[in-house]
Image (cartoon, rainbow, N blue to C red):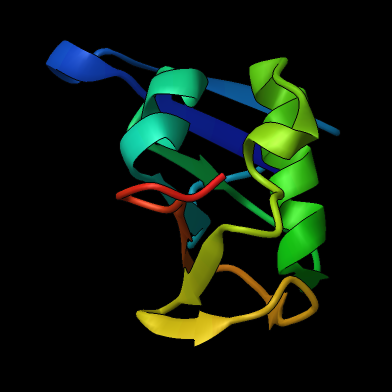
Length: 109
């Protein structure tokens, strides 16, 4: 079961439920910055997971739900932080984890 909540500017949000009612428990939160925020059209996205998944899978799920190319979130020049600690794409995350997608902020590809 997955619940995705997307928060847009001006306080507008919507939730999508997959696999039945997901409840209102803790959720993994993705935070987007700089160009990624612009491409995703949102500052953050919450996803409720039924089991822990690698960061890469969480990003693939978010890209699929936002109907964007996974390369929008998965890129060799990006950094990823889980609960404010730098991690790689194979790091496993679960509900209540915060994942930040950090593209290069000045220069880079």
